[in-house]
Length: 188
Image 1 (tube, helix red, strand yellow):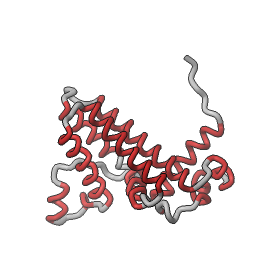
Image 2 (tube, one colour):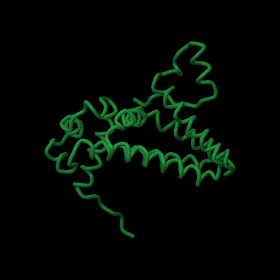
Image 3 (tube, helix red, strand yellow):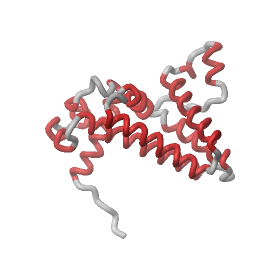
Image 4 (tube, rainbow, N blue to C red):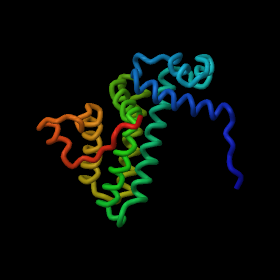
């Protein structure tokens, strides 16, 4: 089968979505403008508006890409599990996710999405993304409900600790919360 060649519009759409992730991660949904995303992408605001009819639609596309990257990382982790047991698969997925959120933009856009859940489209996207991730983790790992709940809860704790740089804090409370949790240094 011949390799599919992306059109210029598809390439630009991808570039805009990547720029949206970076830009929204820095400023959040409520403050970032389409013009700021366009400037980051190196294209005109009019072209971004041609691709995405609203800032919400652009943010949703960025969030969907974030969830796609999470699923890809979880799959890579699952493939690398030592013995394929539910525990091994969850452990490997957790490591892959910790590496992924070393890209702080992917972590931060998720935090900003949670703060923008008053918008119904964003709320649907967040719920859909969490549902897809949870269903994937359950199906791929074959772990039971409590193990999946623990995995997702630990992921959220990892978000919090990474967002507040708790791994760099030399204090008893930070040591208590970060004990046994894997993380990766921020990517520059």
